[in-house]
Image: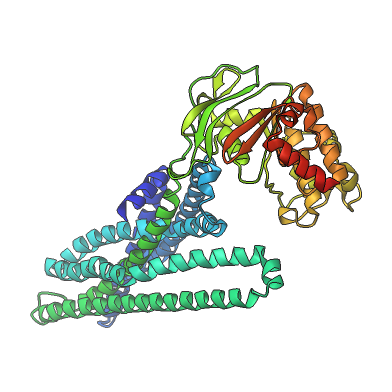
Length: 576
C-alpha cells in the first residue's frame, strides 16, 4: 500500500511548495478558529464580572481579528488547495497517457475497454482527494498539536498532556480502526465500480445484439444486482464514517471533561482564574477540528492506493525500445527484410515459425492465407506492437530495434484490419493521418479511395458528422474513409490489411487497381485472402499455420499446383 503512494508523492513533488503553503493556510484557519473560540469565551466570562470596557478592548479586537482572519485564511486555503488538486489531476492524467501511449496493442488488448475507462476516469478522479484528504490533514493536525501544546502550556502542561492524549488517540488510533473496518469495503467498491463500467460499455455498444437475441433483461438483472451490491457497500462505509465521527465527538467530550476535572479544583483553590475555565473548555473543543478529517484519511488512503496500483500496473512498456533507441542512419532504401522470425504469445504455441521474406521497394508484395494463419500478427511484429523472440527485421540496412518507435511510425501508412473512426466529421477523420493536410489533399485521397462521390451527397459534405465509430454510415463507406486516411499519410511504406473487406465487387476492383498503382514510388504490402488482381504482385507469400509454405509470382504458384492454387480455384468456383 505504501509503495504506490510514495510513487504518487514523487509525481506530485512538482507542487510540494504549494501543497505546504495550502497546509499552512489550513493551519492558520484552524488556529484562527481556536483563537476566536478562546477570546470569545474570555469576553463572555469576563463580561459577567462587569469590568470596565477598557479591560475588554484587547479581547474585542482579538475576536474581530480572528473572525476576519479565519475567513481570509479559509478562502486562501480553499483557493490554493483546489488549484493544487486540479494541477495534480492534470499531472496524473498526462503521466498516465505517457505510460499508456507507448504500450503495444498486445498488452492493451488484455484489458477490457471498461477497465481502461475506469482507470482513465475513476481511478485518476480518486486522486482529487489525494492532497485534500491524505496529504494536508496530517500536516495540519501536527502543526495544530504543537500550537495548542504550547498554548495550553501557558496555563499548565497537565492540560497539554491530557488533551494531547485524546488528540493523538483520535488522530492515530481512530484512523487505524477505521482503516481496518473499511478496508474490505473499499476494495469491493472499487471492484464493483470497475464491473459496472464494463457492463455499461458492453450494454451500450452491444445494445442491438442484446435486443435481437433477447438478452437485454438478463443484462439488466445482472446490472441491477451489481448496483444493489454497490449501494449496500456504500451504506456500510457510510456507517463506518458515522461511527468514526461519533467516536471523535466522544473523545472531544472526554477531553473537555478531563480538562474540567483538573481545572475546576484549580479554580476553587485559586491556582486558575475562573474566567479561563470557559477559555480552556471552548479551546479544547476547537482543537478537535484538526482531528475530524483524519479517520476519512484512512478510508481514502486505501482507495487511492488501490487506484494507484491499477495505474502503475500499466507502467513499463513491453516495447524494448519505447522512446528512442540508438542513433540511426537516415533511411533512403525502404525495402523490408525479415529473417528467421519467431513469435509466440506464450511458450506453448508459436504463432510465427521461422518466417523469412523480402519486400522490395517500388513494388507490391502480397501475403495471402486463411484467417488465423498469422498474417496480421506479422504486421504487428513489423510495427513493434509485438516483440519477436528470434530473428531480425530490417528496413533498408537498419534493424528496426535501432529505430525509435516515433521514427518508425513515420515510415508506415497502415490500413489495419479493424479501423476506428471518431465521432467527428468525414474531413476530420481523414485528416487525422496528417493534420497539416489541405482540403484539396483530403479530396484527392478521397477520390483515390472511391469515397468522394458518396461524401458530396451528404447534407454537409465533408463536414458531415459520422457518429461514434462511424455508425451513421455503412461498413463499406467506413472502410473507404479509412483507406483515404491511410493514403493521406503518404508514408514510404504502405500496408493494406484486408483493404477490400465490406466492399462490393466494383469498388473492390477499383481499390485494388489503386493499390497496385502506388508501387511507382512506394513499398506496398498487401495482406488479403482475396486472390483477384494478384497477378500484378511482384511476389506472393502464402501463409499457413504461422509458416510460409509457398512463395512466388501468381503464375509460378499456379504452376506449383499447391495450397495457393487450391485457394485460387475455390474462389474462382465461388465467383462462377
